[in-house]
Image (tube, rainbow, N blue to C red; front, side, top):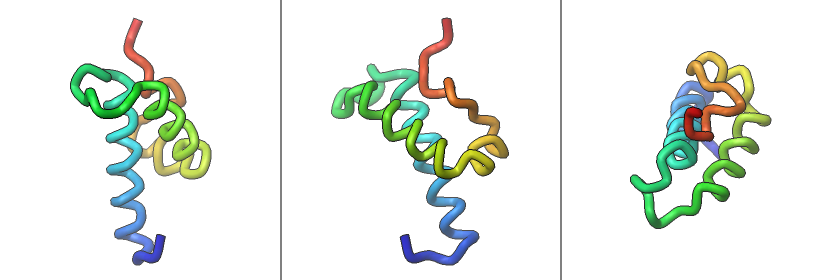
Length: 66
């Protein structure tokens, strides 16, 4: 991604939130499977762990609450 650092962080944070919300509530997004969303979220989380933690996200944020 070729963007300024501050813009890059904003774009990545939007992606993290989007994939987490799709994984949490798959009925709201019928065009994407929850397993794909969780896989994308986990890969993004692994690459940008510090940014995800600053957003209040954890490794299990993409799963529905028990």
